[in-house]
Length: 382
Ligand code: SF4
Ligand code: SF4
Image (cartoon, rainbow, N blue to C red):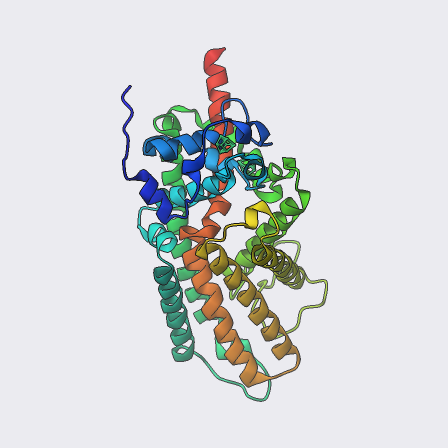
């Protein structure tokens, strides 16, 4: 079988942040030391080779970059300072851009200016929409319901959730097709179904990361992941209309409401959890990146910073809105609420399907497909 070589691959990967892969002399220390590398899915050494030799197709069809959680062991053990951990991170950025059919991902990862401009434009559109389509500004008592009636917010929320879901799912489907090739449709559906619970478990617990030596990193990652998944649920599902949940309440569970829920109400607890988890995780990661305290924090791409800054700003403005409502400060609350959504909405609409947030979907899906494929091949061999 002929192997195509792409002479421009190294240059292309450098645009995604690759720095030291050329230093690798293939001793194999990194693969030997990686706690997550397994027979059949070895990494990271082979990706140093793929990058050096221009083997683009090998990279594109590999699930292994998603099996790495960037603990950094390999980079510490590398005698050449080739930074294999960062190379795996670059591979994930590169793959995200390959899976994305719109081309936005590539632009986000290769041009800071483009990413910031896109976030600003969507943010300004959100702000403009909120100023144009507002209801009554009650200046006696804070009323988000009157200012932005639920029916209007519901429509905007549904539009946002649909755009985001469409782009994310179409890219996830493409990733599965690229990783599995013809096998994707050859494998019986019941085999996929039998591994679904593993997909869910990996997503919710990030348990594979727990196999790495640095348990703190796993915990921080878990907090961030569960925090922003909860925030996503609150904004995309409960922001305006909410849903009817049998057993909890027949009333819509609205995130944006004028009455204050009792302290132990599920929506309030979810809001507090998301705020605390994101604030804790993002602060830890920001300090780590500033101090370069761990191997995984040695190299920070602009998208890493944008992601953390957006998370922090969303959390902080959310806290301010909360206080503004409790202290009954109408003007300040309405203003900060607009700013809050001007940050949160572009973060969700652009970062989830096209940038750093996308790994939240690609990683468990890749893990799931690796398991399904292994099971299928085992069945074929029996
Ligand atoms: S990246 Fe470093 S540790 Fe890994 S094979 Fe290359 S030289 Fe060896
Ligand atoms: S960063 Fe950690 S998980 Fe990733 S390849 Fe290196 S040792 Fe393995």
